[in-house]
Length: 350
Image (tube, rainbow, N blue to C red; front, side):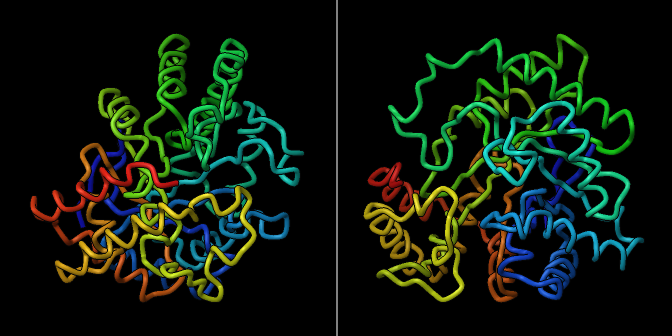
């Protein structure tokens, strides 16, 4: 397992990050324990969670994933220093989390305290903002006309960002978090946080995690360039497009217990005719080279310039073993060219 520096932080992380959002919904404590042990044995030291997990988010499962991780840490206190633990504060819109209100500096301070109690630890290595207060082009909102940027009050958003940074600074000074990062952000959001950090001598964002896969590569090249040039780690989430790039939804299949059978907060926005056409063509490339579709997709993500660590998630040990093994695969220039032939036909299928 390769280890890399997490942006401008002092943290060294594996180039595979174990995501945990299914723990507490599709996976039990015992499942999570097995996944953690296997991942650590394979050299993964980077674990990502969030206060809103499990997914799909509900009031009943809010905080359950952090609790599961906390239970494991309580039973394995000597191993806390072996992992880089990342969590996130939920953004607005979920009525059972702070009344659905915006992220503020005060909300950061209280949310960090609550996460630490659930995680049964004294500190979080990387604390991230799950999504911006303003509407952003994520979760199917990236098409022209979906958002009207000209109506956004930039000054108000900047003031909110400054307040958030001050809340993060208080947590860092208290030793409760080590570094801070972003999620579901844009080049403007990243740049504004960096500007404010420098101007007011506040903590600097060290990473951003956004959706990124063969089916959803809108962050390439503009956001990725922003990350590389500013020394921010780029952390793709959903590299298998919510499981679609495993091939399990091909030909209209809906396996029992799979995510697409569950109520989705943002709808099944990946389930499009073009998505399935693209998957079929990527599957053909994988088949020609005796690779699984998941392996092809994850290896491509790993090899994309600018990617720091890829966040994977699995609901079974078989899936987890295959996903981790994919990062030992290096795709040849010929295979990458075949992938790009398909990509050019389906650059934005959903």
